[in-house]
Length: 280
Image 1 (cartoon, rainbow, N blue to C red):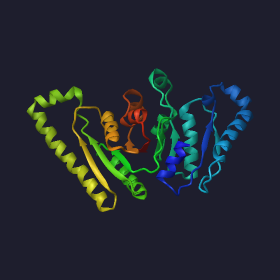
Image 2: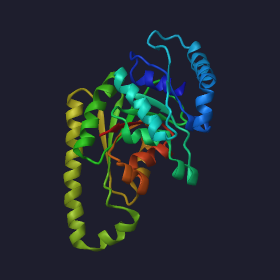
Image 3: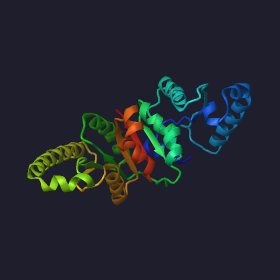
Image 4: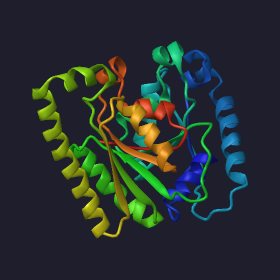
């Protein structure tokens, strides 16, 4: 229900279609057992979906869809969902997350995080502790200033304008970390380079904000050179700005996602507010 209300807050007039994917991995049963009792599982799942939509009076809420996947893997289930998204022409996916942590999440992965890697459309992720605001007033947009991030900002701008929300463009100078700050500060050659580089970055982020303000989207900027990690900077700024939504681009590959993680994934795991991810 939280995800539904947030989707309506982002796109008030949009059609929302409840979709669930039924698969043996989700039910934690062997494929043979799933096949033998598929009718029973299907009926139960359909009843749950019907019960979910029963109390919602919204002409833009469509009939729910129940998809079935024979794959005993999260990636297979994700592909089943994305095939349906493509055929239906959906422009955004809303999803609840379970915020699993520790070794269980590391080895089993997560449906939400797998979806982030492969979805061609923006994904709105909502964790169980999220409080749904009556209106989204402030959106924090973290950026690495890449071309793909700018494309995501261009997609976000009309959404923010439609909601009359303020955009806060946030950039953290990523090479200034706790481990590197002392080394960089002690060497004049690095200090000169980082100062020049920071000046160019600041100029770029201010130009983006200037263009958006001229287009009618209220926009401010935050430029962070403090020695801290990028995800920590994003979450701290979201709290400081009292943001209702974090929107960001993700360029995570399967390899980087598994081995070193990604900023988008870290933010999704820890954010107390909804996160909208545009996959480049």
